[in-house]
Image (cartoon, rainbow, N blue to C red; front, side, top):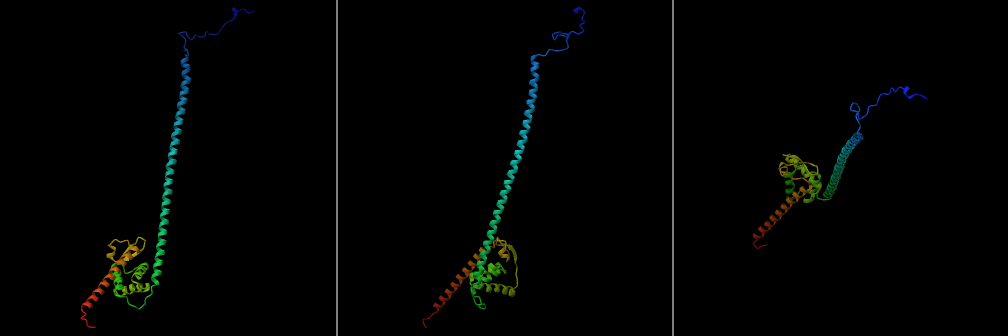
Length: 235
């Protein structure tokens, strides 16, 4: 047997945690718990920050998509409105062209002797247009004149041509009608600020023709009355 007394124990004494001279501090239960809690807290804070950043990024992305979608909707609506307006404008031009062709065809069907002079009522209407509206009526306007005063299209057109040769050209200016036509008009007509549509021209000519017709009938009635008052009873 070995003698225990002969064993040399070189191990140094382990300081007791309760020894005041010990450099090791005791680990309390609170400290042991605080460390994992602190670690969990930091992890939770990091996770919250990450989630917040993701939510902000998602919100910004959603906002950009919404703005982009709104802009695309506005662009589509604008293109749709523009397309509708173009379609309406094209339809209006086609209808106007068809109406003008019908008027010209109707005027060309009016038959009157080529060499027959215009009567006084017809001349008053033609001169009013020449002096106060235009020396260069378009074909649709010539057709309107021919229909109202009941002269052939060719005769009305030739009358304006002959009148320009005899009287020369006077003051004129260019205006644009609502239909996009370039029209050479007299200054007095330009200052009136009219629309210069076919409908406007037709209305002006019809009113003037009606006044001329009424005045002619009144003068004829007056002449007949004067003839009757001078009648002495002898035939």
